[in-house]
Length: 102
Image 1 (cartoon, one colour):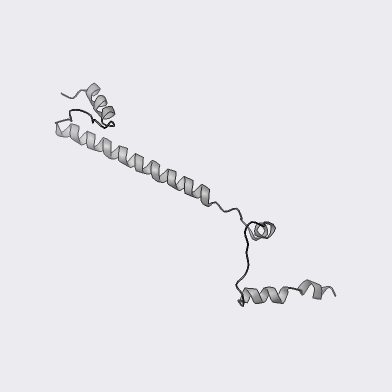
Image 2: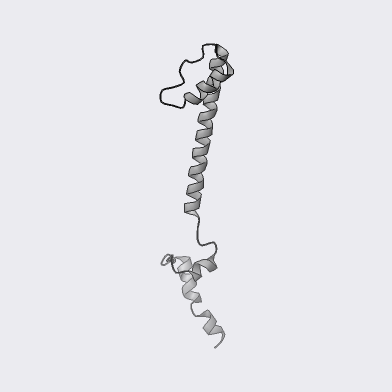
């Protein structure tokens, strides 16, 4: 007979390498144990996935949030692709302010 006390003992000792001792024989008890272990495995998988996502997001957080921050910092080197339309734009605008005020 599997009493409430024996059920708790089985649940706690089933975490150990020796196992929980005598397993329940009734279908309802075996179903309850299977549901319990399914719940434990799902909670463990959820916790592991959450922890991995949390640690990854913390590590991948960008330091630069805007172009102004990019221009003010010196840690990240940046440039434009040579002979591209962006490169041509910057070459055309290189002395634009000087031309306006002279």
